[in-house]
Image 1: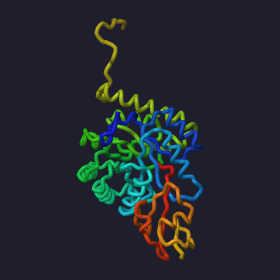
Image 2 (image 1 turned 45 degrees about the vertical axis):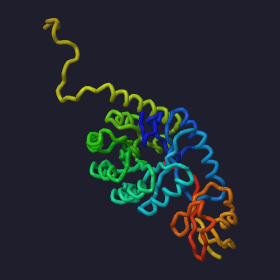
Image 3 (image 1 turned 90 degrees about the horizontal axis):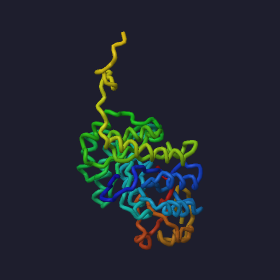
Image 4 (image 1 turned 60 degrees about the vertical axis):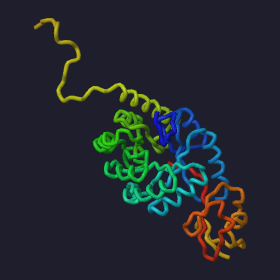
Length: 256
Length: 65
């Protein structure tokens, strides 16, 4: 199971908490799937107590909390949001998002490194939402990140692992760094493929929350993660282009 | 004095962040605050003066991905 900043996490599934049909379904999705980390955010308090009731529900889940800086487009905004999240959620973990484009929600790699540097110096344990770029990964490690979270595909698309070569290359380049596929997954098979590539966990939200049955889908993802991780440990056969018979050829009857 | 609270114009009589939160109904709320885009930790709210036209952000836990 993954270890993030010296903390053992009991599951490879990290779940977002947005867009569920109801709080009850959110709670059931976490409990049935055994997800180990919940991502949360900060938004303007409307004065209706929604923030307090949400916080109580998340605390009752008994999972680790990972606040995000979702929607932040500048370093300053992300750093300020991280500090505000630290105070509210009482954790030094931060899922760092510095968004570079409003349509693709692609991370801004330059702002990301700068914000990660500042927050690491401020004592945060940064989980950077990043592209699968290996040079960017190196820069983020240089400034103190000890977990990396490359995207599978743009947030909310459900397209899966858009660049398998890039992700395999990133995994191979930094084999000892805990890595989470964050965003873009739509199906449990995508999660299984991520595990087969050697990633440590996945973080998803829309694929579960927007499924017809979010509780069943969260559970399906949990099973897929188990299967993929087991397959990775089982050392899969290398693929080949030519067919090779699995039934012995020697001893075959001469019938023609 | 007029200040902007979470994007809305408000009239308040409080002159510090701490008393403004009480006046605005956030006395016991689990919130984080920023004044003019700068984070103000809860320990510094009593000493944070507010001035006409200040922009106050009051943020609370919410769903996130």
